[in-house]
Amino acid sequence: MDWDNLRIFLELARGRRLMDAAERLGIDYSTVSRRIRRFEQELGTQLFDRNNQGYTLTAQGLHLVEYAEKVEAIVHLAQEKLTGHNSALSGQIRLACTEGFGTHFLAAQLAHFCARHPHITLDFLPLSRFVNLPKREADMAISIERPESGNYAIAKLCDYHLKLYASPAYLAAHGPIIAASDLQNHNFIGYVDDLVFSEELRYLEQIVPADRVSYRSTNVVAQCSAVRQGTGLAVLPCFLASPHADLVPVLEDQVLFKRSFWLVTPEERHNLARIKALRQFVKDVAERNRAFLLGESREMVTPDRPASPQ
Image (cartoon, rainbow, N blue to C red; front, side):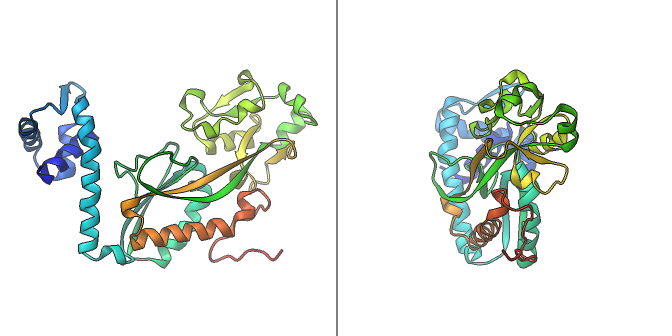
């Protein structure tokens, strides 16, 4: 089976439009169409259904994607080894991460990684969804769930705590919260229920009924901003909320959630030197910030800023 045909097939499968696939491949869209038709004839099966929305994979096409992505990974790995990039601290890395952790913790840390490794190009993707590692959306991911299947190298990165927060202005206007039963009389901010991308984010259900959640957002940073404006209460990661002086924990001894971050790397890229360097860097900064991530300190530690003496 011709690798070039598989390469064209994968690009069309991912983009679903001839023009998009042609642009990424650097060839004419009519060539993509012709090559796909010829490929289907050689295989004796239809790989795509054509319609007004573009190209949709058939059942046989879906099967082929699974094998073609494995071939793609092997080809890329062979290229890395033959050119010596697997042992050099250079090249490109695409790192995906959850939005809150990425924006309010990791972004500042990664600036130091880039300064240390000027020959590495880092694409950083803080997203409110999971990335598709088999489709090479990223070379490494930091996830709030440990993958249950797949050919990955997986390591626990760290634990972090979440607490219930409110603004002092909100508490002054709505009265003190002494016990968990008091929560039934307050407004809450949470995720859009049918758009929650992980069950690990459904912690509000353990505190109050759904009808008490009056403000919803798919973005935890937006939730934090709403709490600071006095809109209501929300469960927020300590690393996001604790640096803000206008946020205070509520029922700190009663409402506390513990979650974990996981480092996930496709096995075929796990031992690349630049991937190993980034993985170790992320582990180191997470360990140095253990107290900050658990909500025991309000101060984030960066590589150029040592931790305060205990």
